[in-house]
Image (cartoon, rainbow, N blue to C red; front, side, top):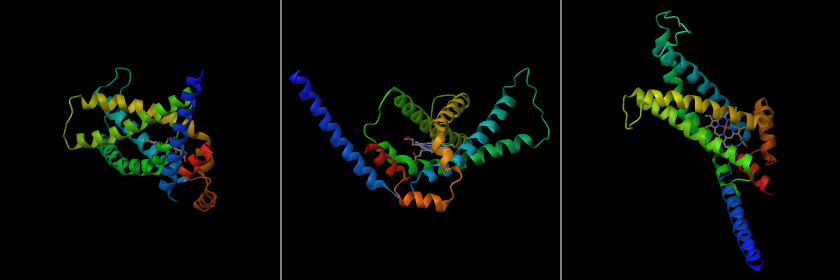
Length: 212
Ligand code: HEM
């Protein structure tokens, strides 16, 4: 019994120390540019770009591996070239957008406790899958465009499978953040600034408040 309560107080003390430290890190990383509105503004560009890449990629895949019940038109003659050009250009533009989005939200990594409950754990796993696939798709796609394959797996099959994983992870991400997204979607920069001066909406300020 006594041992249990000592162990309890040790873990509480360690947890408290880590919480204070994570709050300090989040305050140090705070920036007026790291707002929820910024996460949504970049997020919707990213979402749109990933959807364009998904459908242009799917069209290209279906032309190379046609389904017997889904005949696709081969005309106009330049359609495939435009489709592939769009896929590569938008896919390459995704890389700076993705880095900007991750820069905006990365202070959220320093939240203590990192997980509180089974649903939250599942959400954290979906964010990890989202970030990993969102980084892997444009980077391996760019290397494919350069015809450089420093890996041992089939690029085409992996790229196709991961596109579905990414689409699913993005749907979960949007569903989780939907209340925030709808709240911030139409706010103009002035409203966002007013909220920010309240410390109400910076990505790291949000976390610090959650911890209080
Ligand atoms: C591949 C695309 C995307 C990636 C890799 C991505 C990544 C992330 C990450 C890592 C976080 C922090 C999550 C956390 O720790 O809780 C986050 C937060 C967020 N994302 Fe995304 N995201 C993507 C697309 C989107 C889209 C399409 C939207 C909606 C337009 C969106 C809206 C948000 C919002 C509202 C937050 C919360 C920001 C806050 O709490 O201040 N994201 N995103």
